[in-house]
Image (cartoon, rainbow, N blue to C red; front, side):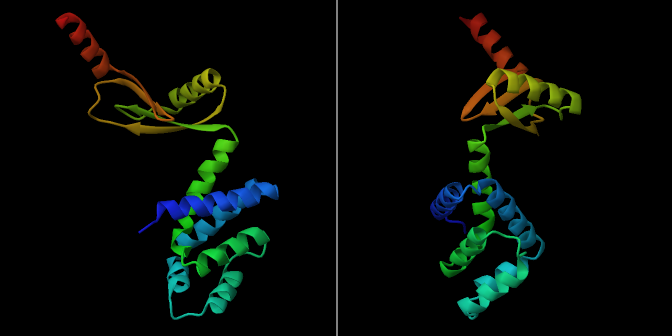
Length: 178
C-alpha cells in the first residue's frame, strides 16, 4: 500500500535537490526511464524489497540494472529509497515528480468529458482555445460518460465548467418552475 505522505515528502525533497542543481528536466526523464524498466521487469522491485538480501547487494544490483547515464542524484535517490524501504513507491514518486515538474513549467491539465470520444480535430481545436484563454500549455485528457446527453464538461484545478445538455435542461426546468 502506498503511503502518500511519504511519496510527497520524497518527491519534494528530490525536486528541491534537482532544482538546486538545475537538473529537474533530466531527473524527470530519468525517473520515467526507471519506471519503465521497473514496469517491464517487476522482479527487480521484488528483489530489492526482499529483506533477506543485504543493502550493499541491492545497491550493487541497482548499479548494474539501471543505465550508467543516470545522474548521481537519481542513482543516490534510488539507494535512499532502498535503504528506507520505500523502493516500492518509486512509480508513485515518479508520477508526483512529473506532475510537479509540469506545474513548474506552466502546464495545466484539463479533463474534457463528453458522451462520445472527441475527434482529433475537435480535440486540437479545444486545446488551442483553452491555451489561448488560459494563457498556458494544456494537457487535455479526454474522457467519455455514456450517461451524458451531449455537450461538454471541463475540469481543471478543482473547478468544473459544466456545459452539458443535461445541466442546461436542468437550468431551464428550474427557471420554468420558479
